[in-house]
Structure formats: C-alpha cells, structure tokens
Amino acid sequence: MVILTLLLAPRVNRIVSFLYLITILVSCIGETWVYYLLVEVVLLVIARAAWRWPSPTVAPSLS
Image 1 (cartoon, helix red, strand yellow):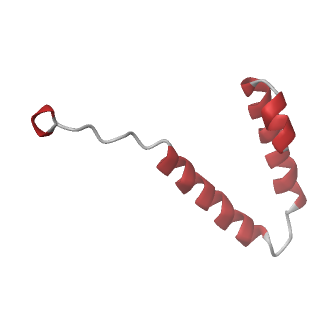
Image 2 (image 1 turned 30 degrees about the vertical axis):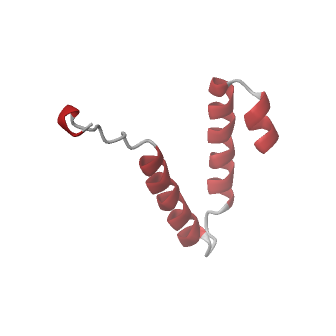
C-alpha cells in the first residue's frame, strides 16, 4: 500500500484506499475485532483533524 501511495496519482490513490478500507471492513463483520477497528478509525479521524487544523495566526501587533 505504501508503494501504491507513492506511485499512483492522488485521485486514483484515494479510490484505491477507499476500496481497500471497504474490503477490510467487510472482512471484519462478525468478528470480535470490530470494536478495535472502530477505535482505530476514530483515532485516525482525530489525527486527520489535528493534521488539517488551521495554523494560528499571529496578531500584527504582536509580531
């Protein structure tokens, strides 16, 4: 998956990643690991939100 991230175009990479996510989710249905998968997905959403959080702007009077 890492190699594909580097080689594929961004749009194609998003589609492939989404399809991969769907296959992982479908394979986990009925397993006890679904809870842990949910925890990981929530942590990834939090990490993505933190990564994309806008930078604080400095007031002109403080610089």
